[in-house]
Amino acid sequence: MYKVMIIDDEPTIRERLKNIINWKELSLAFSCEAGDSNTARELFFLHRPSIVITDINIPLISGLELCREFAQVYPDTRFIVITGYNDFEYVKSSVALGAVDLISKPIMKDEINQSLRKATDYFRSLFQTQEKMQALKKVLRENQSLLLDRHISRLFYSPQAASAQSILSSLEKLGLDIQGRHYFVLILSPDWNTFPADFDRDLILSSIQNIGDDFMDNGRYHHYAFCDSHFNLNYLISWNLSPSNDHLEQLSNNIRDRIWLYYHASIHGGISLSTRSLSEIHTLWIQAWNSCKYSYQMDDYPILNYQNLKQLPHRLKNPLTSFTPESERKPGATQTVRQNRLIASAKHYIQEHLSDQNLGLSAVSEKIGLSSIYFCNLFHKEVGISFNEYLNNERIKKARQLLADPSLKIYEVSYAVAMVIQSILILYLKSW
Image (cartoon, rainbow, N blue to C red; front, side, top):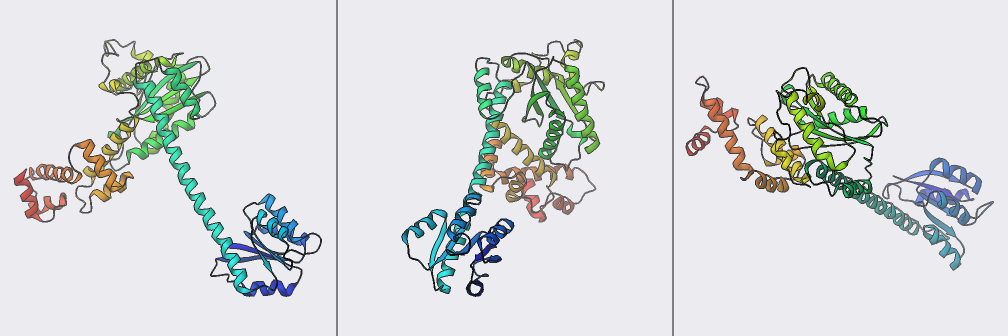
């Protein structure tokens, strides 16, 4: 509802206006009325109406001057000026103020409602424009996040050092300040076996990242985190103080304790050595990844510092040569990483809901937040077969596993894999 204020020194005209306006039809609500400029000024700033209907001749100052005053503070206010004059300059001044119409006395019902409709059309158009701007800003934020991930991943995954400074420059243009005297890489890896199976991994990662942000946003250092295709959080941390792996280890353990408090689940982590050069981030990432990997083997080191790992040669003869093939990831592969995560989430959801008869393309695409068409094409591209073929294959695999149990009947297996018509299941089993 758009609020309307009426200003006229004649009470009968104010009453007539209230009686002839199509309030409900135009989605309007009466806000307030005034008979002079002082009262009008006080009520306007108190109620902040969207539309002001005013006589051009009111006590103390003119209605036109009053409109100018209001427009300076709230420029989107629409003004309808009522006058007995047909002076062109008045008309031009009113329009410049944003007055929708200048109406001559006597006031006609159709004329005032037509002017009000123009005003409401303006606000609807303004609202639609604002909605579009908000949508555009959302897209820009999402694209900015992708660009940040892409640039950071180039530092992590590429052994080429030549572009480090240009990447830093690009990050600064995107609003990310990671300059510091010392750099570290921290990897946090949730132990998914300790989390409930029905938990959404993306939501858990988001929660872990928020917890990490809470501990790190203390002004000591800058940091940036992104998720890789293995559902691990990779942190690039810059620090202006003297390097302290122990401090990062304590910080990581604080995050780990908070995760245990919230989920009764575990995370592991790896911390690299420090460097003064962004060109060495790739090497630090390898250190952190190997530390994280070996933390799973050592109960005493759920968060493993690479400095400690170097003192355990019997566990790792050559950390760099034992690194996983992910280190060969091409620069700028963040979009592929995100797609891999989405497909992995989809597969996980399928496995958990094979008994659901409503499980299908629409349900899975909605779960991971993609349109059905886009998800269908992406799934076929990443997996190599269609979604429906994959779903049927998984149901048949599950059925074969269940049929290995002699105590289960064929109809029980049919319901367990959402193939309630037994003949269809038998047909699929024969063709497999």
